[in-house]
Amino acid sequence: MSSNKSDFSKEIPDLVILHANELVTMDSKIGAPRVGKAMSELAIIKDGAIAIKNDKIIFVGTSDEFLKKMKIGNQTAVVDATGKLVTPGFVDPHVHLIFSGSRENELSMKLAGKTYLEILESGGGILKTVRETRKASIEDLVKNGANILDKMLQYGTTTVEAKSGYGLSVEAEIKSLKAIKELDKQHPIDLVATFLGAHAIPPEYKGRTDEYVDLIINEMLPIIEEQSLAEFCDVFCEKGIFSIEQTRKILLAAKKRSIKSVIHIDEIVDTNGAALAAELQAVQTGHLLQSNDEGLKAMAKEKVIATLLPGTPFCLMMKDYAPARKMIEYGIPVAIATDLNPNCWTESMLMVIVLSCYNMKMSPAEALTAATINAACAIQRESTVGSLEVGKKADIVIFDVANHYFLSYQFGVNLVSKVIKNGLIVIEN
Ligand code: NIG
Ligand code: FE
Image (cartoon, protein in one colour):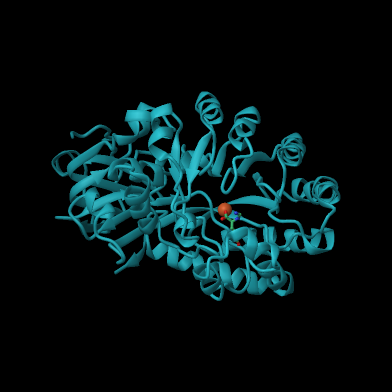
């Protein structure tokens, strides 16, 4: 609980936050991504201070150290965080950002006992959203995405992974990825683009999944590489959607084009997705409700990140959640994300933290690690975000609560007081 990093710079800060009751630095000196017991080490500074110049952090330490060693200039904005919690901005590493329309009608089907795959097979679910997304203009998609990102920022999220995946044609997938590029330019939140052309079998390819896989490999991936439209390639690997073999084929083709692997695995059925993720040395995987032990151990060995998405079983009214405790015990780096999509629509990482604790038995500290530094690792942004350290981006959240336990305790309300993105106060509640 002491100051663990200081840069006694001669610079005059633009902004200083003083007297934070708890300054959760998540200083990643102990290694990122964090595994096992290290997931509980938040590197908290009591009576913490953090100083910012331009868009970067130039000091992290106690308020005493700051006042002794650094100067406050005429132009320096000072924020008093007495009694408050300060953390790194949340990183949301699994988001289906680009879509049109909504699916609130599906709640009554779920209440009547219909499963996710039954809704999909009857032309609802992802395929309903695909029909609407194909019709939307790029401007519509950007507008919808911006509305979502605005809410995310209000809830303390400052970096987001954004997936395509509701186009499922060359034209509509490229349109979706271009919408992500445009949003990244327009919006204060930083985006990392993921191509999810293999999200479902488009209706015109029904019964011809292999041909659709070829379309992804031969027509979509070359354009994506040429126009630098995505850093990651994702596949919904699931019984009845894309098989292990098809998933491997797509991700290896993407890898050849330097597009890194992400996979939706073992959400409904264990198809041995975890073993495939380890084999391909995927950067991160989503869901993992049904993964077998051997696969999980292989993931731990390869340090594949498990991004757990408890909002989805919550929305699907499932009783099972991903076995987070076992994963942490095995040494798998665990991250958490909203999985925001028209089936599971929440912008709030606070909600996900609560679900992680109550339904996956993660501790408040583990959940916060999973939402910050480990989430940054899941999109390979740990050198710039996910912790509060000198030289990193000044992406910071001030919460109107005294300590980090409250984030897992007081739920259903927005606890954010201020959000600082790239050194600027962008949200003040
Ligand atoms: O991660 N499972 C696949 N894809 C999304 C859901 C997409 C949708 O239902 O629209 C997920 O949960
Ligand atoms: Fe997802």
